[in-house]
Amino acid sequence: MEKETLSLLDNRTGKSCEVPLFKGALRAMDLRQFKTPTDDFGMMTYDPAFMNTASCQSAVTFIDGDKGILRYRGYPIEQLAENCTFLEVSYLILFGELPTAAQLTEWTNKITHHTMLIETTKKFLEGFRYDAHPMGMFISSVAALSTIYPEARNVRDPEVRALQIQRLIGKVPTIAAYTYRHSLGYPYIYPDNDLSYTENFMNMLWKMVEPKYRSNPVLARALDILFILHADHEQNCSANVMRSVGSSQADPYVSVAAAAAGLSGPLHGGANEEVLKMLDEIGSKEKVPAYIQNVKAGHGKLMGFGHRVYKNYDPRARIIKQAADQVFGVTGRNRKLDIALELERIALEDEYFIKRKLYPNVDFYSGIIYQAMGFQPEIFTVLFAIPRTVGWLAQWKELLEDPEQKIARPRQIYTGYDVREVVPIEKRKPKAAPLAA
Ligand code: ACO
Image: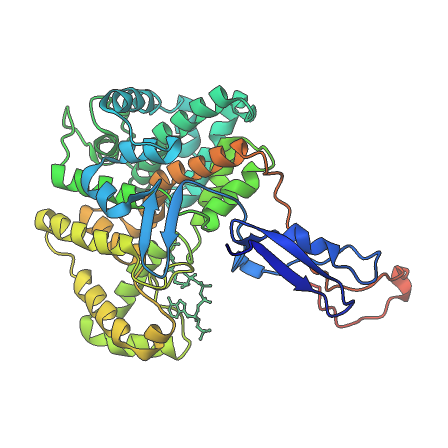
């Protein structure tokens, strides 16, 4: 049987030792015994951007980036997208098993009864400028919920945690819909408890003067599938923020707000908005080759392409492409699809993209579907944040239940000055100040 250890030799001192591996990984703390001189703090690992560092153990999501595999709790994403609803998948992600019919009814009932916002939150939202970016409104409003539920600070209590999880999943579509209506200047629509999670979201987005909102079932299902695909993605940038902020025992509202802030950047969930801007900038199929040449020459990136983990096709992008056909059957074809298809075709044949293993990611096609459904690009990342709230909460719950976790606090390699004396201001000489902002 092979030995689950690693032999280490410090060539500076000649010290050697054999350390046990933990599930195939080296525990970074085992390096601390290597010191020179002997009163030194001990050796650290250096890993900017966490390229090769596991920060936790997790049983939620499995990704094999080389094979293009994504599973929630062991179930392939393709099967979940085909057979389940978003609330079913949320239950799975949070509690580890798919619900029975009775469990799903109870779960749906709990979420449905937490969709309302306190009126002051509505007023808070009204205070934003007419052209406020929906993601900024979303982040601030989720954080503001912390002021309404102060008991949420008691994060060590499993019952308190469970209640905040239900509240957050129930309320994020309501906040998201309000940010959308605000930008249009339309009155807010209250939740309708007769409707499914996704249908109710559509109701709050698009109901006008009709007494009862009826969504198109094809579009409602497509949105539900998009929610399933976006629900979790293991230790990505925003999940890492959720865990990092949550590790200080901050309450889940401010922690989710922080995670949503991480999501908002153009290299993460903000990419879907950027893809649409890029397609607009390209303008027509004929201009795609020139655009790609420009990217290869180092002028910007192909938004919606590339992934830290997937070095094969992103399986979510494949499912989204299928959902797109169904959506376009209802809405008519988005002409940007032709530009996107051409972009994908040329990029996938190009040496630059092949060599770097750059494939379309989840954001490449999602924006085109959202736009066909009637959403403006500014709201795309908010549409991502609704389902990802479930993933953030599952990561947060797992963190708090893990006895090995503590407050997240990385180390650094200090590169600044050694100690120096403060010179009185009248004696200071101007210097090139590399640290000045
Ligand atoms: N277009 C052109 N070149 C790219 C792209 C791209 N989209 N992505 C990476 N590259 C190039 C880099 O310039 C680099 O080239 P080099 O080796 O010649 O320097 C090489 O590919 C490796 O790229 P890194 O930046 O080191 O890859 P990393 O894993 O750090 O970044 C990321 C991954 C952030 C997703 C990156 O591919 C990117 O910026 N993509 C565009 C934004 C995007 O679509 N983000 C959404 C990701 S999915 C999600 O978060 C939901």
